[in-house]
Structures are given as structure tokens and as C-alpha cells.
Image (cartoon, rainbow, N blue to C red; front, top):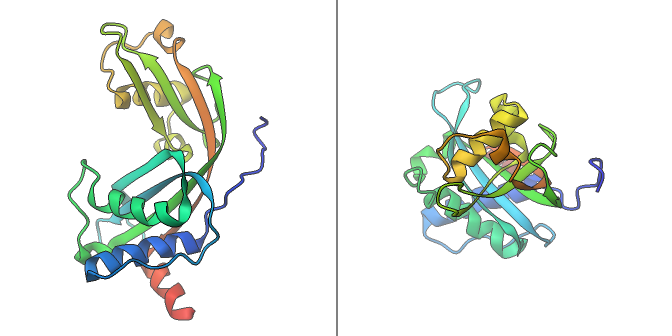
Length: 207
């Protein structure tokens, strides 16, 4: 599939608004909102970040990111993964209501999967990747993924990104060229949309 392939599912502000609505409903103890966006069947991720200072220019820090690489019904899955990523990412404490004003939310819809590639068969800023390989000592199968924006945001080369991803998968040994060459890589693209809480409120008030 060419790198210019059309992204089938486009993330929009409606998706992100649904995430903020879902989180607010959770804090209010009421049923979540009904989706107003078109349904789709695709893999997805929901990412929460928080600005740690009081200025809009402060760099946001990751607060939760969970999704699925298996296609899901978007009408039901977006609300589900909104709460999983906000409340059940084991790397972080659950998001609290008092943090809402400092949050931004990104919805990523994944598409254009290409499988059985080599470790370097992807482009920084264009592709996310899933790697599968075996721990050379234990023979244990390992796998991990980075979304398309991660390598660019971190300023990584392809090799630096793959080596980091191998560690994310649970391999902490020496990474050699021979080991990298055993990787089976799947690359994919995504459409993403991000809103801050202030942008979310402004859009809600304008409707």
C-alpha cells in the first residue's frame, strides 16, 4: 500500500468532545452521552495530557493513554476507552475532576495497516508501528506499539525508536543488528484530533 493512501477514518472534534463529555458524566455519576458522530469500525486510542503549570505555553505531560489495535465499534468503544485511559492506566493515578481544566485529549483512529515488514520499513512522522520478536534468551514472544506521532515528538531516529519500543515490549538486554533484523513489523497510519478543555468548553458554548 503506498504511503499516500487515504486515511479511511478521520478523527474530528466531535470525537474529542464525546471523550470530555464521557469523563464529566463519570464524575457527575450519570449515564454517559449518546454519540453524535458517525459510527465506524476501527482500532483507536485515547490520550490524555495535562499542563503542569498555569500557562497555555506549558508543555503538556502524558496523563493516560490506552487503546486497542483490534477494530472496535466506535460508538461504544470511544466512551469505554475514554474512561480506561483516564482512570485505569497503571502508570498513573486516576484522573480527578479537579484536573479537568488542565487537560487536553487526543483521539487517534488507526488505519492502513501493512504487515510483515522489516524493522526500518516505516517513516518518522507518518507511520505508527507494531513490533513482534522473541527474547533471544528466553524465547518469550514480545510485542509493543508506538503511535505515529511518538517518534517525531521525541526527536528519535528510526533505530532509536525501535530500540525504545523493544524496551517497552519488555526486552532490556543488548540490542544488536542481528536482533533488530528478527523483528516483524506492522506499520499503520492514524488520523488524530486534539482539544484542550478550554477549547472543548468554547465549542460546547457555541453550539
